[in-house]
Image 1 (cartoon, one colour):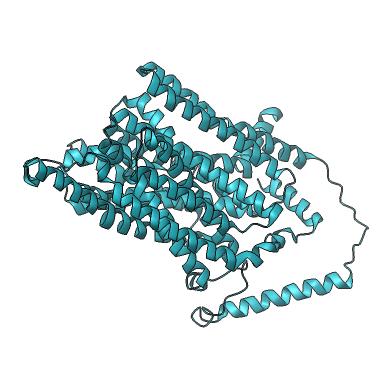
Image 2: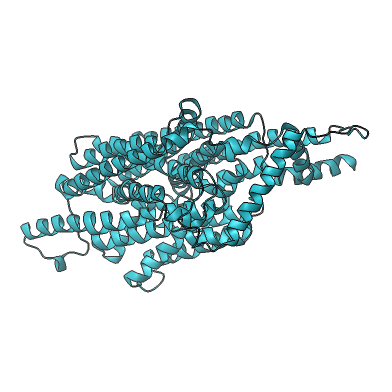
Amino acid sequence: MNQSGETVRFLIHLFNGRWFMVFASFLIMACAGATYLFGTYSKDIKSTLGYDQTTLNLLGFFKDLGANVGVMSGLIAEVTPTWFVLTIGSAMNFVGYFMIWLTVTGKVARPKVWQMCLYICIGANSQNFANTGALVTCVKNFPESRGVMLGLLKGYVGLSGAIMTQLYFAIYGNDSKSLILLIAWLPAVVSLVFVYSIREKKVVRQRNELNVFYNFLYLSIFLALFLMAMNIAEKQVHFTKAAYTASATICCVLLFVPLTVAVKQEIEVWNMKKLPVEEPREVKVEKPNKELDLVHDETAKEKDGEEKEMKSCFLTVFDPPPRGEDYTILQALLSLDMIILFVATFCGLGSSLTAVDNLGQIGESLGYPNHTVSSFVSLVSIWNYFGRVFSGFVSEYLLAKYKLPRPLMMTLVLLLSCVGHLLIAFPVPGSVYIASILMGFSFGAQLPLLFAIISELFGLKYFSTLFNCGQLASPLGSYILNVRVTGMLYDREALKQLKARGLTRKDVKDLTCLGSQCYKLPFVILAAVTFFGALVSLGLAIRTRKFYKGDIYKKFRDIPASESESVLVSGSRKS
């Protein structure tokens, strides 16, 4: 009886533990990248509903708008518990994508274009609720490892496209319409299963914390390599339904291996909690006067901060604190640093989203078969992962060892993206494979860098809202570069080809362009815009170099050792 009671108590401790929360966040993030699969099923929407490329790109813009306008989820997270945020996200994900599936399969009457835009915007916006619920909570729980944490979590988002592709081949076969159904129900179910595991906890300093994250990294790299191997094998060998099922099963097992790391860490915390702690009764500890003065100074500062908060936010909007302290939302949004970051994001992420959204049509225009186009999407997804973990871990290492500003790494990533765009503009045999890798890597690397820079420059107090505001430039860039530039130039070239064949727009159901000229000019423009974004990011690196040369995590290490230990033990007891 005692043994079973002990087991039950440990299980409760496990499910409420910090490390199990990290594992649950990995699974939620691994299902939160459905927007990256748009290139796979967009052809079904285009052919079923008879859209031209401009209309399809408009739909892609609303997908990007929903995926990146997460201000509402951030504001909701400021005033509600995390489980509520995740539940809203689950409902939105299911409703949005399920309606698209009903439309594409002809189970409901053909909706108007604005209705389709609304459906995909709602479905994509659910991704922000998953990000806000899981990602922001993890960053707040591990503030000193935020770069690593962001890289891992966003890495799993990057892998989600390849993971879902394996699952849909195993469950539904080669039916891309059913992929939309999988996108509708799977992320919603996973978020609901772990809805109570994700919650903010008191910051705890743990000596082996970084080593644990490296263990998670190695396991996720193994998963990414397996997915890449499967992607290559599927092009060389014809896979049967049984082979796809075996591949998907192995993929699921690899997804759950990090649970063993989480359980091991929670066992260590559990065992430490059970150690007898003898508290001396007669010993009195007196703080030195200097330490007492420090306490008084801190109290005075807190009091001053509270008085400052009592003022109207409009009175302090142009009187921000030093970089790294907690900015108010208005102070951050109207600061020059945020404006520069906004422009760099507009150019970088706007161009990257345009490239990823058009990947299906790029493959089609260059004469690649459908199965090969799916491999491009998988390559983008896998290298998206490598970009995210690389930027998270490497930027953290370079920052700690060489005090290298994160915006400088953003500059290098955008320059790499330029090369990918030029390979699409001037294609040679096999160049789309290389371009998919470069674009996936650079696209993935930008997001962890963006979120880490925002958290470092403007503090963590309003991070839920600020990181969602920071990516607002992305859908704006996507609309201008995707709909107003790429889509219109593609359609113009397609109409030229129709005219050369003696046909008009009314003679064909969907407007398709074939040949290397279809995307030549659009991607030259994207490369130029991305290069401008790299120059802007370099300007931010120069502005913030003095800040990054200091100890930006000092305030998280200013907790006395004895207090840190008591937090760990008491945190275990609460669990």
